[in-house]
Image (cartoon, rainbow, N blue to C red; front, top):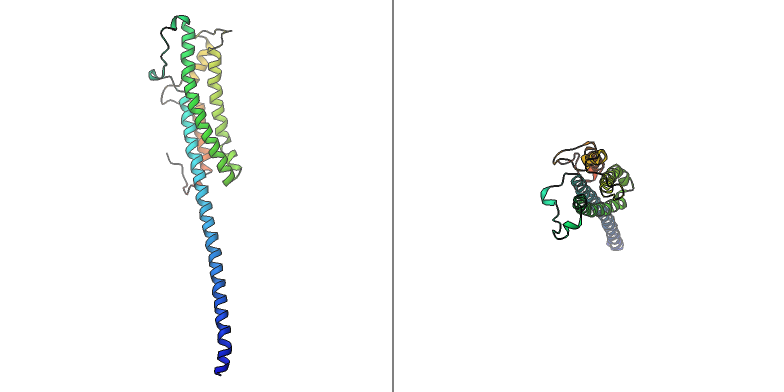
Length: 210
């Protein structure tokens, strides 16, 4: 009997060690998979969060683009050079300078937004582009409207007077009173929120924070 035990004990020990090693390996694999899922979830959360943040900055820059020029935005033209320009040219230069600064801010926000969207596309899929495509199109529509206005008032060949119906019509759309909205600005906000809603599941929430 003792001899039998002496024969089987080493085998039993080897079996236990083998089983224990197998269990440890399975646990390690399961732990690695859980860690990868957690890491992937964290990366997706950060990518979605960045798109939402950058889209909000772009929305603000685009909204600011079409607000009336405030007194502290008006540039101070060189008084020595003022006699060289007509009143119309002075007005055009002043407006173009204000809008150029606003467009610079928008361009920076747009670059950050595009980078965030690309990162989200890699981690979440190409559907992210489609989710935010209407928002991007409305941003472009707003920029084109401002560019159309600037091209009209600075056209030296036509010399369109400030009081012309074409200038007044565009001026109303690119110089909204502060805190006011029109159909385009409402559409801009709604389409940005429409894109954000499709990212909510990656942000661990069910509603948009205002």
